[in-house]
Image 1 (spheres, rainbow, N blue to C red):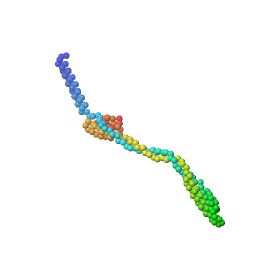
Image 2: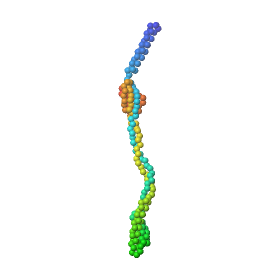
Image 3: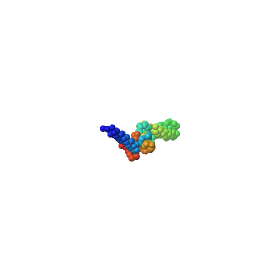
Image 4: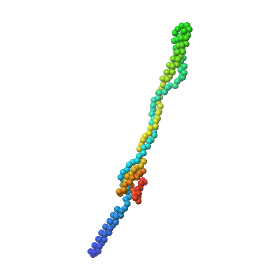
Length: 178
């Protein structure tokens, strides 16, 4: 092989390599970006209130059922005692009037005494009392995403949290989950 042929081959190889490098650099630098760079992500939340029932046992005072609604027993007992006391007072026809008056007053007093006793006759029982309370929970419903494509800034709402980059297809964001 002569020197000129060897020199030609070397020069040709250098030119081809340099040309390929320049073409490759130009092809890569003119190519559109394939990803948008995520610079900030903020959660968008919604407060949900969930009802639940809370029950507790409570002590309650109740009035016992009345067995003698008209307080007959108290009236009769009071009348007997009042009549006996009235009979002890006075003499003659005054004794009869005192007995009747004592019986009437005793009957009334016995009636009222029994009425008060019945009102105070109570018992304690337990009841279950319930109420509805609401628990509040914040739920993420979307994400507000700020991004850059080269020098251009943008913002978009997404239904899922993106990573560090958002894919681009023909210069447009691809927002669906992959």
